[in-house]
Image (cartoon, rainbow, N blue to C red; front, side, top):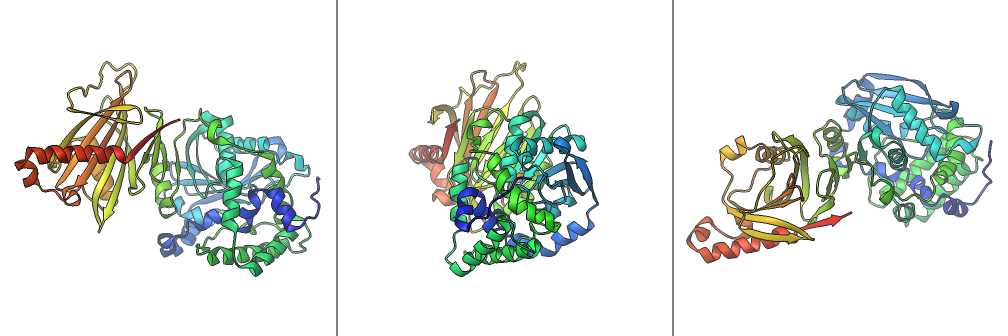
Length: 495
């Protein structure tokens, strides 16, 4: 077995790069999931973990190692939960994600070098390729043609490397508490997140971590628990929630010792100076980056197929449909939801983002990626629309309308009804009365379109139906201002 020399905390910090601050915060990304909403449902976490159908065992990994797995739930849709570390063990995330087992089948496994999986005698096998092949072994064992991934922390790096190697085996990805796509940037962010003015606790955390890293802790589980407890106190001292349930300490003593001394250090190095901003361009699997306040609802909806076929990160969307651009909406808006729907001969992906004041929608964007199959003889044609606008080099056909949607439109038009359902699910309705700018841009085949509908409450714009009906100049000024605001709130960022 390879060895790791004793080192000071300062030396360990240099060697660990980004990973040490993450350990020092006890996987700080996990604490973000413990919001007021999730804390209110505290008992359901334990209940779900105890009552969901469960099975566990060992499966063969790459190169002869054995991987410990546990399955929760028995729903049709299966999700592979990939813990961080690397090597932190499934119990670092299982208690917090257990509620998803009420509607999904969750597959957890301990990565090599941690938990109840093999602790390799040859630490050279703690290499990135072996971690990737272990994940592929999990897919084969459960006979999954394509996997839905829920990676946490460093698990996102492993899943990204897996997606590069096996892009056709990836169906969906939900990134939670994500480690950044560029190692150096992730290191800076983790170091900043782990900083604390509580020097006494920070010093104690460093002392405890040092004994775990150099293998001198005589009671690795006890030291681990104290280290995590101090880490929680540091997190809470920074004003963040430390009420996550996962732990790296719930493993045999030899596994806890091995994880800190070898896997967390050597395996993270083995992934090298990663940069997935370019390497994943060929991966078309849809992904979503969580917001802490909606992580569990987002996971449920997205992995069960109710979510979009693109990427959501706050107010940024990228679809695997046309156009080949990320669409960014003014951060004053909040993403309320997304659906993929069929429109007869066309398929569409709809996103709704709204600005809400006093419980009512004042303004919102309806973003719709829509396309027909290449063999379709039908072409889109919006040449009759009266206005022309441009956003970042994309030419849009535009029209403007004042007044509310009719009941028939909401009932009979599939896409309008879908937008109404997304609003209703978030507790809102279409603003009425309202004014709307509809903007459409087409690809060169005219079979694919990007539709943007921007709506404002007339109350928000301080206009009335009577003023617009009585004064043509007022209507023209209002229409021009509406188009201007619609364009100003969007950016199309070509890759």
